[in-house]
Image 1 (cartoon, helix red, strand yellow):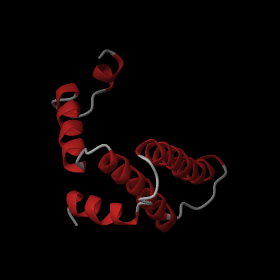
Image 2 (cartoon, one colour):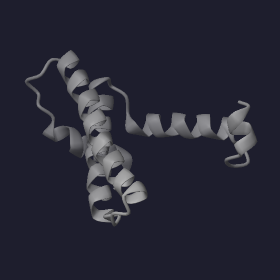
Image 3 (cartoon, rainbow, N blue to C red):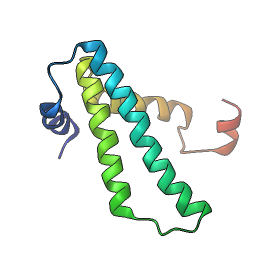
Image 4 (cartoon, rainbow, N blue to C red):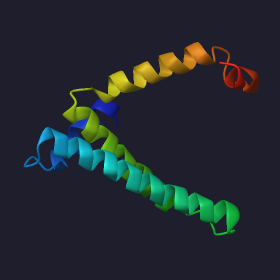
Amino acid sequence: MDILRYQEKATRTLNLSLTEKQVMTNMCMGLAGESGELIDHVKKHVFHKHDLDREYVKAELGDIMWYVACLADTLEISLDDVCISNIKKLESRYPEGFDVEKSINR
């Protein structure tokens, strides 16, 4: 599935009774919550020696993507534009790929 199709399908499940400010707040809070769930799972894997459940990680990443897609859509930003801008930024920072020295001294 391409990113624009995902954005279109994801936003069909957005609560349209909310104001723009409510949607923005809900999406940001949801992003924080879902990111926290993912972080907790990884923390338990790294520090508590729990198994890493890749299906759980995939589900949490999907939830995070939903919030990102809905926030972007609410602000009339295409995920395609978000991805293109991000890649341009990364390529300008690390034209030859990631480099620790460039990361420290950028």
